[in-house]
Image (tube, rainbow, N blue to C red; front, side, top):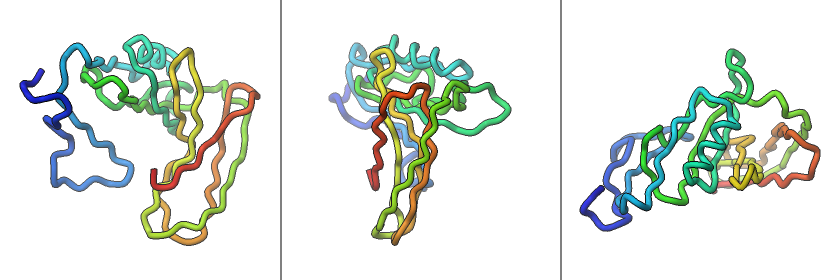
Length: 173
């Protein structure tokens, strides 16, 4: 708890003035009343489905999921989480979990967009959002900084069912 008004940045990591690399995450501790906050459960080293259930039961309404390739870990295993276990966050926070791809993703689509980008530091994100037992899960399939000019953005997306899916492409947020 803090004696500061709600919404004041109390602490940040990395500290102000630090250099952050593209794709790095920045944590902010913001003042608010204790009863508004949600405690982030520890979800690393467990199955993705169990992690999503724990996040939903903790009171989160949405989560961002990024699949990573890790051949030495079983499919669908959570490797990392942001925020860290035990951190208290405001409602509306969407935690990020990174997990290996589950083995049940059998419906594959090869997607590609041709873009004309301006500038030299364009963040391109391809994602899809699905409802998992009342929890909104945004899955990031492609995330990369790209230079300006004509660019092709290819990605392979995999799903566990053949129902139609919406896939979104965002450039610079």
